[in-house]
Length: 348
Image 1: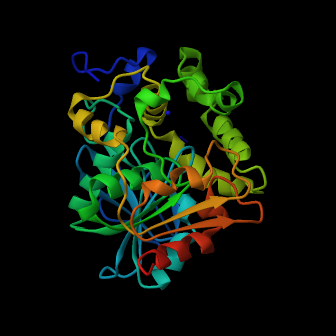
Image 2: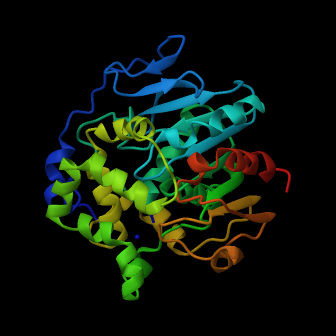
């Protein structure tokens, strides 16, 4: 959820260094497995229901990206981007709705999640926003996808917004839960009133070695707690949670999550090759593409009133408030409304 220089080959992440050396090898086969009911990685831990789509893999940039694909290959492309502590199942019900409407839907696992793996064990496990955005551009290049509708929630909304702002030629339109989430590290270093700081308790926890160790040991319990806090009226069952929690067993998951939050607070360095991208993001660029933003009436995660970010969208724009106890994981809690926003955004 939403807030350099290299020292040799490593970021200054304190206790994270041991996780960088973990092997990036994966037994997953390129393309997808078969099966009438589901596709899986070879470990069997990640299973994608046939009604959702097909689990595939492709080398893109620094990663071998695991992604779910559904819909006609020649349909208008849509990229659906997940956040933390969620995974591709955020869009398990959104995807078939869009596929049946004729869209080619791509739902990638972000670095550190699911079946996505680093191609090299020596690559820095960097969770900064610029790296995640570059991952998505690399994926589009690997898929030979010149342009797509980009849509996201949580970290995924931030990445989608960065693409829309910095690479508008690669984006047809934007759908973003909670609006404009591009992060300015200098602003994030400024203290907030105590009540606002309390909402960000987990990023201060992650700033400590105790927090890193705690998340490593209790990542499922921790994630379930965040789900409950962020979506207090969402009555998800154990099976729903387990489908997503399997994605957190990725060997790089803890390193990526902890670095993401430490970097936002200025407590960890990023990679210098992303400095120009981060400078452009920090400038707060206006997004000129057609955009629909959405917000649930029971979002327990930190977020601002839509009026705060309205001026950040200069193109055709609409905001939609959803009622009925919809929390932070809006696409999974209100899949029809999210899918409709994706369908409607190019028609504004």
